[in-house]
Length: 329
Image (cartoon, rainbow, N blue to C red):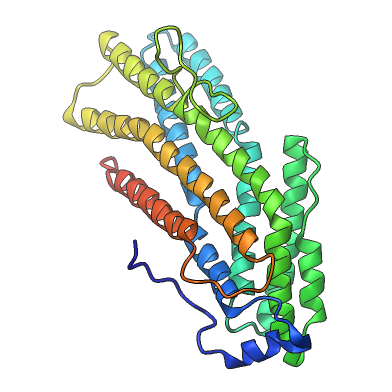
């Protein structure tokens, strides 16, 4: 990990240093701005991971329902079974509404930090930043609707600072807006992170305590989460289909089942990686928030950001490996 290199958008920008020291005190030092850029780079595309977990669950559950319906010889009963399963399938899409809203906010926020930490903060980027800031507040409002929370967005304050910039002062306003964004986002990110980890908990085990630790039964076994439940259901329904005599044991069908089983078995481990990366995301953001409270030169990289980069990349490689095992194409 020590060899990890991030983009440093402010290397060699003496003009930035000059502008930031206007009025005798820098809003942020170049090293602080670089740290924000590092965080945005590390967190880039994180939202793809929870989406991948949900997609694997949906595909596995859909296959389970198909096998179950195909094992029913009576056409009327099979049709009724399929109709019921489709309803369950559609309802499952709504269980992640809170996490989906949270991921929209996180994704927009990371894009905002990327714009604000750019070494080429032009008029065009200024306009794009204002749009992103407005969209973030809209995302927070949507999150409030589905979660029952009453969070206040921070995008308007950031947009106002950016809007007031221009000319030689654009760099100063850029740094000011960047600091406002990170500080304003900290309590929001706590809520967003909790929503995502709560959803991943459901895929890992059936019940967790207040610390997010899986609860066990009297025999010391964890209650099964969505991942294990759909895996077990898929196997049971496939066996039931073969037992009914209505299934096909061709090599092609066995290959398809094995592919589906691989996806089902991958749900829990991918959810674990995704949850851990979200926890590190929050820890890295909090450390970044602490480091931006006052103007200071940062020594080296922030360790939590380096960890976040590695964890997300590892989870993405795992996801890509699973997706590449697509025999049925």
